Image 1 (cartoon, rainbow, N blue to C red):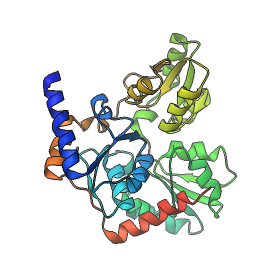
Image 2: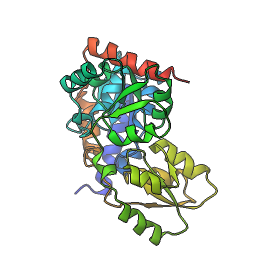
Image 3: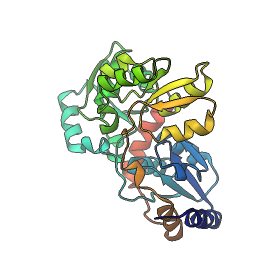
Length: 306
């Protein structure tokens, strides 16, 4: 068991190594509390990668999962990108393969491919546009084609379908954390906190979206809580976000919709792994140039959408 003294010693080592390596520590909103507390920047995956491309530093330490570090490497090819928990993957990103996607593209030659940023570099390279949970609707409506293959999250694809006349062909992928949330759990939370505003992530199932007061990405949820006149909120996403909400909006009361809404891959990072990663410059995440260049195109087309 790591004691408080051990933690402080590790944090001191991390700060010294960060200075020595000229490193930036980027931490996703779902990471463990103690990892969020040592971040240079906390946010969602694309927000962090975009920031990394503009921040001074030779090394990016990405505390998240594999596709996030890949995206940072695509947008900052001149920097060393490290993923302290080298085995931290995203099960949803692995629900779509290149061969499968190419087959579906052949079946729908007139369709554009929009991929959620929660996807591998190879899938981004096969796509026309990337999108995030906050801009999926805007991207879908900006695409010239009337038919869209949306990968890999069926729930986000179905959410975007609500706001467009285009035909969306959703892939059958999903986030196991959000997809497991049930209407009964929503009803129980409403009964427990009858005056609270219910905020949910668009990776949730359609029936959960229908029951929510507000639907938003992780960054959107944080902005909504902090700017709202309300004081009580039920938060329908991975519970790691509650730590940041507590720090940024300490006067508000935020309750988890499901206390067991935990992404186990996001929790694989710890202080020892961050320290070791900085010390050894490993595990390092790289993306072959040919794939990175094509994937960067899909990301840049998304960023060009106004």
